[in-house]
Image (cartoon, rainbow, N blue to C red; front, side, top):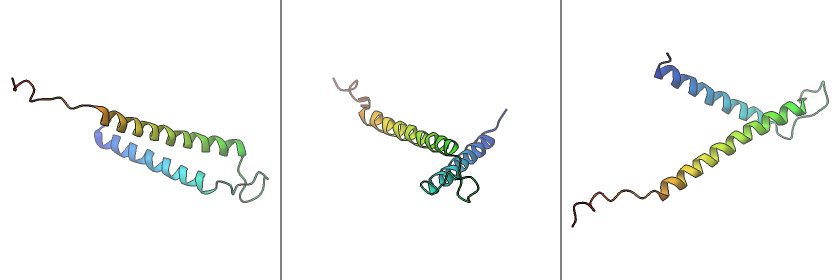
Length: 86
């Protein structure tokens, strides 16, 4: 069984790897070449796959955050005093 501390460390390391991957993907955007043997060579299929997977992840997180904010602002709190007043 995994403890809460191990789970927290695991999630923190996942966030760090995701951030590092995003940094390496977005920092070279537009600077890569498709000519093998050059210092800035990157396989275009692999690069665009990583780019869109990462971008899609950020889009999904953004949509979830906006949805939660909208849902929370539309919830009416219960009127706890209505039962007492007659």
